[in-house]
Length: 104
Length: 104
DNA sequence: CTCTAGCGTTAGTTGACACTTACGCAAGAC
DNA sequence: GTCTTGCGTAAGTGTCAACTAACGCTAGAG
Image 1: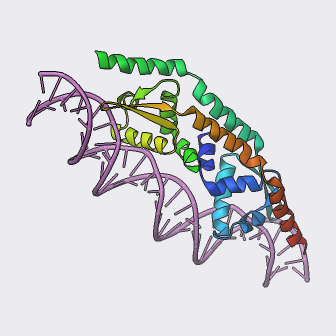
Image 2 (image 1 turned 90 degrees about the horizontal axis):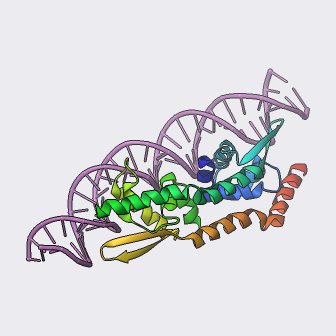
Image 3 (image 1 turned 120 degrees about the horizontal axis):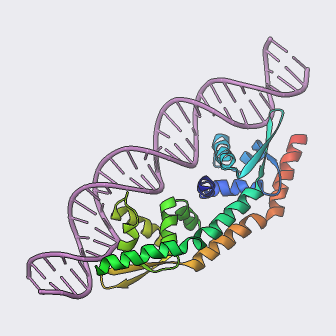
């Protein structure tokens, strides 16, 4: 889950994710969309996205097709939404302890 | 907006954000919550969060209080939600062009 | 078999970044 | 004024990650 957030922090990876959001695309089609960067770099970005389960891969001969994993994206949103709203009581204790340490 | 996502990619900054999510906290209280790291490091993390507008600062004498900027977090969620679902028709054209290039 | 297309992968470089140590600076106590 | 508290900031270090260039590998055509 942590790796997914890190993967999204890179603008190019977000762009790749957009490209394969609604359409399955072969690697060459993804790479050809970026002119200022090597095919190798894109391949590595795709690998990062795949390792963090944000895209899925399908092979057909030597060709590899990629597609966004929307389910994983949904999970990520849920994680972010709940991350802040859970366990806040415990954290408030920490805050109060810090205040009391100042008083003592 | 890009900087906010990058700021969130760091686990410690997410933890800091949680600490000040529901309570305003002075810098020392935030730093004291992390034992394996220097106060200076935390201060730098807070600066990153502040630059990306994820936390707000309030000064009182020499003390500085921080609080999560929930509005900015909401913006970030909207951005992520809409990022993938907008402009997809244009991107589908790219996909079809790639397919046709293969056929031709 | 050879040759090409369509990819991933490795080696090596460069820049970003999280961190520590040391310093600076403002506000209040005395 | 000096001293202390509560901070940020500058300089330097180690590590990670994005990139290019070169290589390797598999599936199919001929």
